[in-house]
Length: 528
Image 1: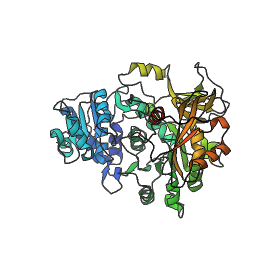
Image 2 (image 1 turned 90 degrees about the horizontal axis):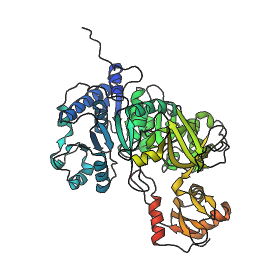
Image 3 (image 1 turned 180 degrees about the vertical axis):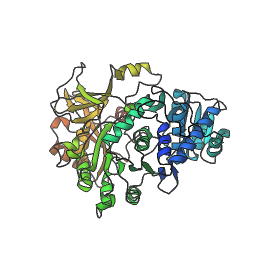
Image 4 (image 1 turned 45 degrees about the vertical axis):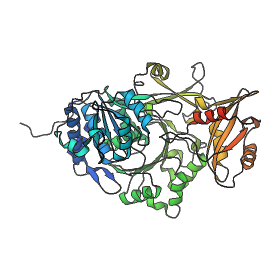
């Protein structure tokens, strides 16, 4: 009898769960995932632990297609549990670690989750949920809420044997959207869509074989594991995991581990540049740095490129694209900088097509000026929304995903995302894009954050109002004067409201509908 290992039976890329198994066969002692504090999982360890966890879950009576919720912070156990579900054909429901009881309850009920893996950080919430004896509870911590099993003991009860591979079109993740306008929708991500995303993201993010990434975002965001952790397993790489965001620790970890890739969200861009101001060579090992998630002011991106050079990848993606990129910039875009590149999200990724359409659904020209709804086709698209046929029919049509974002395309295919369609302000028949006003206001010294929304106006229909977070001494009159110098009269905000904080969801996105609700409850003077 042959002593060779049994390999995945299908041709083409290995199944999502099998990728760590292939890594274990090729490089068993290499770190697959490692905490910045030092604890790690080699490929061999991660393969065995995810096998055992998969068999333990199936041993409880769960079967292919059942849903398992994961409510954990950044940890090695998160990767164990995620890959175990992928191997077992169980459907992953990620609950944001910052969610409160009502938010978690909605996701658990909407998904029909049969099991929950959680940690001490959210144990009081799990206790409040009172899930009863019909849920399988496993905790990585010490709080045995609801007679939860300890993670290590539960995992150890399973055999080190990989379950039968799920099919490519089987459901892998129910990825809940940010929910900036109401209840979130669960995007159905399949094994095929996530596997395809791994190939695409490896290209758009410019990974090298054996890439080492430092990952400081939350793994409880849908995009984190499919778009980055699994993709690094695909290229035989290593993920260095920060347990919480810390810009100085991010730079230290890049330097210490000679990392070739990292991700930088918008808020800490300037802090990252400041940390590197005296010695930018600390990140010489980086081949690329992705800025994604929320838009950043063009001048912030320009400063970033001034520090790291053409290694920036500016991208645009979404949960409905398995959490990965639909568009991306390339190094050549910054050498020298292409005109307008700091306002662009780049060109369509491999296997993706981007179009802009008008209100009637007709394609608009790629002339760099025509603005319409951006729609995308991609091999990584979700198959629809979980148990929500109306939302599915509205957003997924004839192979296209209707994003609801407004944007434009130039003749060479560069995509410019302006605003969410619901955020567009129409004043006196003129379109006003909040992002333009926000960019201008952020140019005022001392202004830290800004969000512009529409308020009703008796004459013009709508008028822009700016909610601004600013330091002491920043006067409304200064902001108004700056806007008057930079913006056409119809675009100027009719009111500036100084606030301590902007309302955000657990993904960090501003909840503009709450700001509009504030305006309805406390209308301003509406001057123009």
